Length: 304
Image (cartoon, rainbow, N blue to C red; front, side, top):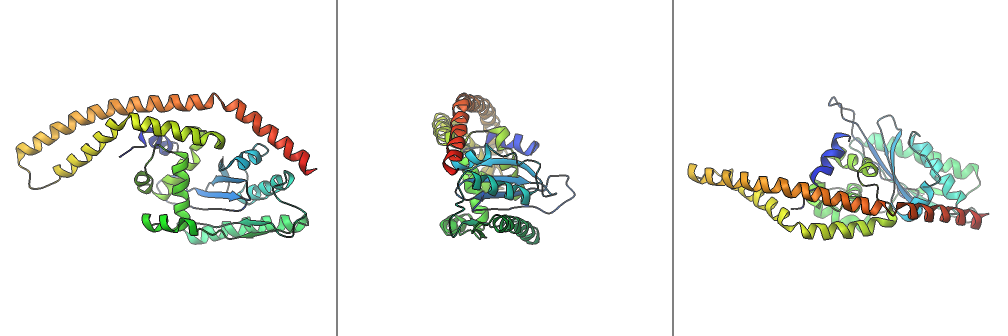
C-alpha cells in the first residue's frame, strides 16, 4: 500500500461561492486545534480552513478561476462570514457574478462533528452573502449543494456525502496518499492536511495535473517500497497468530527487522525524489502567477 510518508507527519505536527463544505470538531482537552473546512464555489471555487474562533487560518484555490479570485484577496485573519462576503464581492467585480442576470446561485452545505456548529456557521455565511446581494441590487441567493455524484463513493467508503467530498479533495491535493490512508484519518487530521497544503505542496491548480502525473510515475518507480510495505503488514498479521511456534516467531521477527530497514532507506529516497518533483513544479510558478495577473486584468476590463 502506498504510504503518505513523512508529509502526513509534518502536517499533523504543525497541523467556494457556490459550494461550501464545513467540517469541525468540538473543543476538547487535548490541546489540538479545532478546525472548520469551508469550500466556496460560484464557478470560482476556493477552500478555507477556519479555527475555533471562526477566523480563517488557511486558503487554497480549487480551480483556475479560484486562483484568479484569490489573486485579489487576503482572507486569512477574516471571519468566515466576512471572507464569504469578500469572495462574493471580488467575484462580482471580476464578472463571475452577473449583476444584470435575474438569478445567481451560490451553494452552501455544512458538515461538522457538532451539527449545531455547522448550522450556525452556515447561517452566518448565508445571511452575510444574501445581505450583500440585497444591498447591491443583485438577484442572487445562497442554496444547498447537491452531492448526488458522490453517493457511490460515500457508500463505498461508509461515510457521508460531505466528508466524501473532502476525501476526494485530499486525493487531488496529495496523490501520494491512498484512499485507505485518507479514510483512516480522523476528521480533524483530514482538515489538518487541507490547512497545511500550501506549506507542504503549494502546487497551483494550473499545475496540479502535471504534479499528479509526476507523482504517479514516481510511485511506479518505487513499486518495491510498496511491495515491502505489504509484506511487512502480512508478516505482522501472521506474527499476531497464536498458532506459531517460538521458532516461527523468531524467523518472522528477523524478516521484519530486515524488511523495515530496507523500507526506511526506500522511504528516504522516495521523500527526496518527491521534494525534487515539487521544486521542479515550483520553478514554473512565476509564469503561472503572471498568467493569473493577466487574467485578472482582462476580466476587469471586460466587466467595466
